[in-house]
Image 1: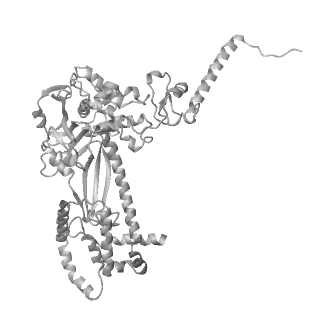
Image 2: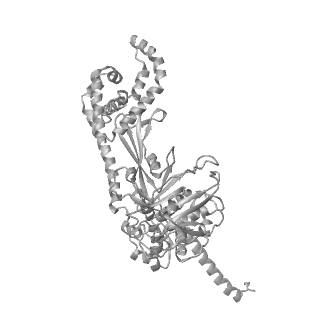
Image 3: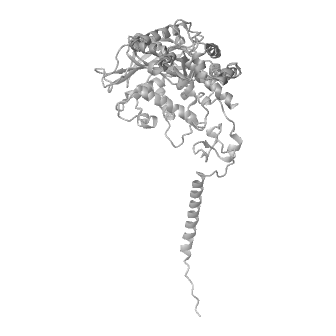
Length: 577
């Protein structure tokens, strides 16, 4: 018998075995990396939590990305167990360190021009102004963001701006900011390279981008609580707080809402010729009446109200944009608005300050145009160096100017810096004060409702009709007036004499506008009264005249109709019990 076998080529086997080995190793690492994107491999639950990670980048040789959040970087498991501190962080950036940057001084720095890369003047002026914002430049030149950046494989505007500032501080010749201009879509989605854009819009995008980069160091905006988001470097520099206060003229209930601000956009109305007058208009009282009535939560009805927008917490660096661009292609307002070198914000604060909200001008942006056109033009800026000298910068051209030349410009944007940095306790005290106000309002509301339930009026509500008692029974009117005084005393009384005078003028205008309709309906009302009928229109008019102009603002008269929902709410509470 002959044995049948396969011939074996030794040379082929020697080449095939290493090839299969490397192929299997490659497949193994491919599968491992693929599964690592969806599962937590080689890490404990404690290690994969997205906490604050404090480590020195130069001590770690291997960086990996968190398999849970896909963004945070960390080092090898051995190094991480020894170095990483797994603790939540309420303050993302120490405020004392920011104060040191705010006081930083380097008088050797000089302005450096930027080349126009094609309709890039709007970005050049913003980059120049940010390059002379003292705490921001001090942080980038002393500490730097690049070593702490978490965007390893992505383009980072903060890192690129640090490179820009370092180059501008060392160069004496104009250079091209093309590395930033070519990435405008990464800064703002609506911005485009080669197009004429708005400088104010670009500055908003740039500040928001730097803020998001700061939050990325701690897991991103979704991972950081809102209170901690106000403790970043960018918030310390540009962040402030606006307060919108609405007060009901019926029950004197006050509603406060707060909004974070990175700049102030001030409109130019009427005969305003100065920045102070524009700020007066910005913080002026607005009356909500007519078709724009305010729905009071306490009255549960639409009532007249007084609304005012003020600054609750002033930023360390104040950016003011004058709203010159109106509707239409030729709707720009080229009216000159005077502005001071020294600005005091105390008259525009929600509460009287201690005289520390004083600012000095350090940068001005001007938009040059023809025929009041808003769709094209050219931007130039004026900046003050750290020695106090003013310069006019037109792209790559730099010219030394005097302060009088700066103050005579038709400014579009103004940048002010505090003379003295905001105290470190102001942020925490304001946050606790707002929380205390909310708790006080809640407790006052609960106390007033409890007194309403325990009052003798409950028997009257159970025994009779609420509407008939409120309209026809004189004793119930007295009870409702006493209840209204109780509820108004529980809310903070901030109606001033100026408010009362404006209420009287508003009521006069309403009465004049409705005089013709009232005269035409007088006979009809008299006939209905003679027949014993009560026109429901009278009840609706009672809401509009809830505030008696002859009475004091602190003791407004009470509208019985506005109290009906409150009494109905008491009935629901009694039925629930």
